[in-house]
Length: 154
Image (cartoon, rainbow, N blue to C red):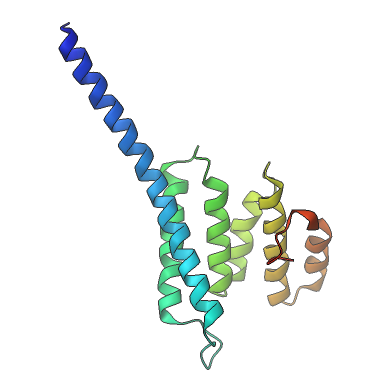
């Protein structure tokens, strides 16, 4: 084969790998960005009359869930998988879908990252608190590694 042809193939392969890598990072970044924006809206606004979050925050949480699910489905070996499940779990919590929140957070309680594990335990406990299941709240609170939580979560 011609060496110029091989060089062109290498460029094409490199470009493909670069674009592929950027696409999955971009998808996770968009999920994270939507979540942070929704969280700011929720924290800085009063709840509506029926204790629901604003439609803008709801839309941002839906975008978070959608993008995080894309990361999980298309890039199952990504280093962002656990964070994607965390974002889904937290988004479901804010949407008051506590069972779905628990289901997603339980997928990461065995994480090698103890901070993710602790945050998952905390939000699972909080979800059970909202569901009035005090036995489960106590169980998950006792599992927490409080030293791994940031000041906001404490």
